[in-house]
Length: 355
Figure 1: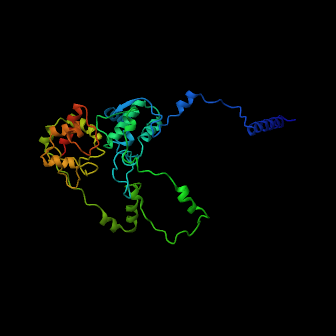
Figure 2 (figure 1 turned 180 degrees about the horizontal axis):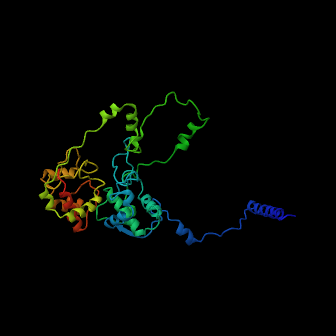
Figure 3 (figure 1 turned 90 degrees about the horizontal axis):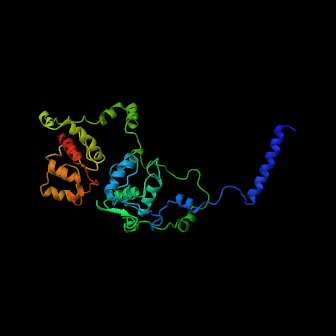
């Protein structure tokens, strides 16, 4: 008998014996998991607070931890970067055709926020955060959604006291009773609609590249059409007098440019700057508050503007050090700059931009 035939016979017998053991329910593999092993794996947190670890974290600590671990994807103020999810904003948008679904506008339970951060974040380094860091991040997300004040501290003891705005916005899924019967039957496989229409273009969904595409196609088909649609050249920016720029320390301006990255998600400066979440900041120094045309300011800012608020080095510094303390009711979801050198740098940087 050949070695190959002997191997086949032995292997066949072994498989048969194994199959019999499996059908008999006797696997003979592994062992029951120990309670401490299950506890280490089971990190879920339930809406009623079950599973919450002991710990606490405040908004200011959350600002730092969020900036270190989360801001690269979700922005310094939880506003999202690119197509990474926004975690803040969207209040009162759920009745729109394009609602912004965030922790503050859509999520029903705070436990979902804690559970997700604790279980899955930071991206690529999941479950590396301590319970205190998770509590701090969740506190900062609440603050970014204007749901708590800047002196708020979240802990396992007060966790259940926090109710999200959309807690009552969900209903029990009853489709098994109300809809499933409608779906039964043979599916339609062809000519299911009398007419097929394009209802939305990819540009609306923010997935179409900014360059090329339609413009190139139009160019090939009708060069005149592209020429007519071409935007007018941007106006030359106002030149700041050399004496005015020279009065500002260039090193301080450079430092301010780095600090301004914390602001750039919402504000723009320089040539071609436009209003975004916040107004354009060109020429802000020395300007009356609320003076940018086309931008809708908060009621709080409009009130202070009516009272004569002017953005100077002093008022800008006071505002950016503690936005909500300086202007109660401001919509700017920014915890503030803690370092005096950062405040001086951002003031110098903004002063370098004229109208």
